[in-house]
Length: 232
Image (cartoon, rainbow, N blue to C red; front, side):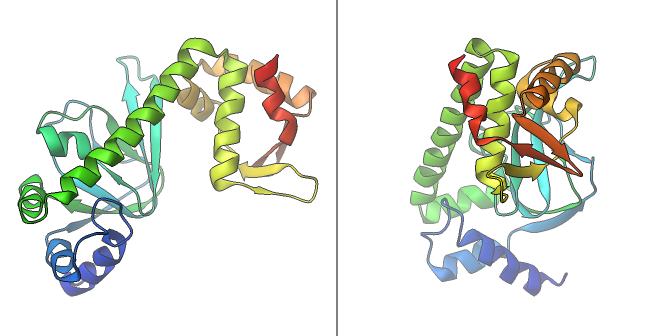
């Protein structure tokens, strides 16, 4: 892409981001010109946990995930970021190493803003920092919810909670009232819930027997009664 084209594209995204949408157009245009566009392939690592990079990223196209990886290669997925989302804000603010590994789920296009450019923008408009802190607090609340799930919910409850969250944000209801979502592998479900793949396989068999979750082609069908799992 030409630089001018990149600027217009990124400006459109910035207008919708909570941390930048309050900026005047002249500031948005100048800031948009400071972004670098990078294409990444599916499965490519964008940065690793403990890397010293401090840039801010915007997902212009595709999906990426934030994960924690141990020495055995096991993965705990913390969050996924789709088109229009931003990530990398913690290191952007404190200048310290990355707290998670970011991996491209699909072929993706990213907009990257260097920390020094961001700090300069904050000097011109301090409200950016306040809006960013608000966004960070919201993500911390989501992280607290994940910690609570790991601490107090069993595997079946964690799995159903995950599937219902996906259903309500990305799925749609079919004619039978079931939520239809893109099918995930048992390994992916395990990584999202902090469970073993074997435990997920057992739970999925039980949920299928009880007709809480059905598999159809490349989709899961989630029963609207699945929330009853929480009450057992």
